[in-house]
Image 1 (cartoon, one colour):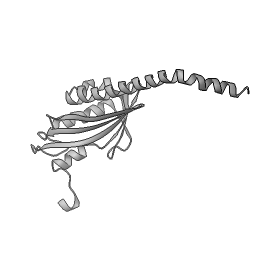
Image 2 (cartoon, helix red, strand yellow; image 1 turned 45 degrees about the horizontal axis):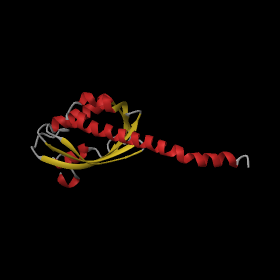
Image 3 (cartoon, rainbow, N blue to C red; image 1 turned 135 degrees about the horizontal axis):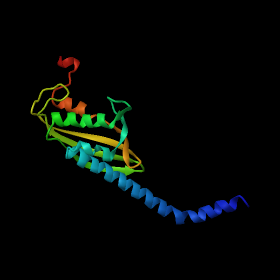
Length: 169
């Protein structure tokens, strides 16, 4: 009986505590979603790359077909944004859907831009591109610490004719 009494008390008190804990979790999820949305708008779409430090940890783990789980520094991340802008100066990410759960935020987006500058060795083609993508972001301590997704660069290279396959010579 001695051991079951604390358990019974915990079960009885749990409903009084759980809604508050759930509220805090929901607040955290909303804050994470706001962080990722603001990163897309303030850093990427407004091309204010110096703002990246507001949204990203100093070191970010990137999981994708190219990086595979590589840790990159904030300056390296900013450099990738700058390369994107050089090749597609009018680009914009259009967020289509956002889902947040615990410390993860998933964004479905469309990248639109015109290839007006050299991008990854491919001279400007003036092709307008529209590519969909999905990015996963893990937030830790109020900053993006880890990302998963398909690199936009591979899809962009395909769209501007920069990918060579064995059959294309």
